Image 1 (cartoon, one colour):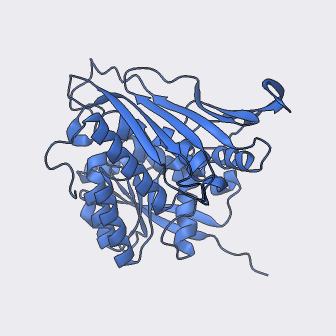
Image 2 (cartoon, rainbow, N blue to C red):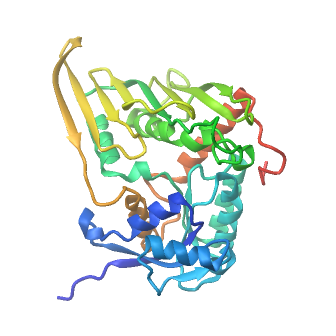
Length: 377
């Protein structure tokens, strides 16, 4: 009997920055190294501001593969008949127009996080994706990594009991006083600041551990409280903290989870070694930094009846070839192959929740984008 051939997804790459470089390198890792045999990825086109930039990108990240088309415009990538899916790695505030153009060209889309500048833009894109009959997903790669899948399994199999509180932080020292104010982390025209750039990662752990928990029944947070510290350099948020409260809407509500996620992000301090701590009734899960691609986590189980005494502890380690961005690409390929419009792991509801929460955090923090940044309001 003939072997079943893997499904091949042909990718067009929009932007030639650092995140796109990492994604392409991971795309070209042999899927068999991560025990994937049903899908394969092929880069067929790269778009940049010039053909020369695209060619240089292909040389540096794809071994100079001559079969990959180098284009000096994004429009040529959208029009290429040998492209099935578009990966968008442009700055945040360009995501909407790049994704919209891709969708109108009937291409499937994987768009970097944060998927848009606000929730209204995302709703517009989802309507277009539905009209065009194509797949659309935000590139929250952490959700698809083996470690995240294992954390979810342990968290929900029952031994730890109900989650009570989650602390998650992603910070980075961007040396903000010595970089240009046009740097993406400082420029409000690029959606600069901690929230949009770093905030999706603390948020993803709140989604996995609380929003997705079976006892929550996918109920949205009942309350969001936020605060920002802005930098006088450009007015973007230097430090942001927000708390999501999950609680039953009424005594008879089907969702029974009562828990909080305390999330923070900063652009002027280094990340802490333990990035996420999820505290349960009967134990804890601690996830090592960096929380966007952690390689280990530790589970502590309390002695029965003694929540201050740890009966046993186990640490799990993960390793694979590549950075970890290929797992989301595998998900896209399978969804496209199976005719799905969205992923079950990171569906449209979760991206909408993210953008709704971020809009509210910015509102409470008094952070408004410059005129014209938000294409849909």
